[in-house]
Length: 85
Image (tube, rainbow, N blue to C red; front, top):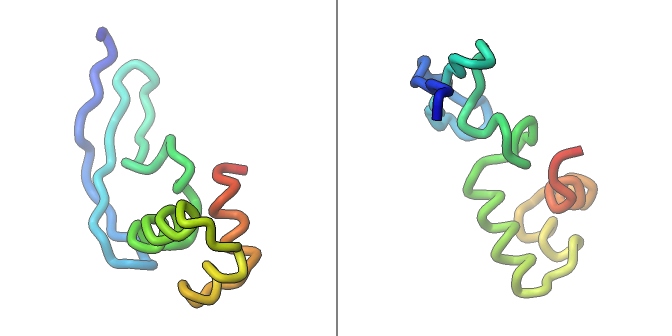
């Protein structure tokens, strides 16, 4: 509760052109993005693609099938499914 986190600007992603929020952590004295501490950080895909991946995975589709639907390489899909490395 004693850690003050404030909004600290925005940035636009190269992949999907979405404006994302930056934050500043007063206690740790560092900036981080809205995806900075989640499994999507550093992955090169849009939120829409990740949402589709989750839905297709939930239906039990294979990595090959998901890669075909999303027009991505199977290795990319496998990395996204594993999360942060």
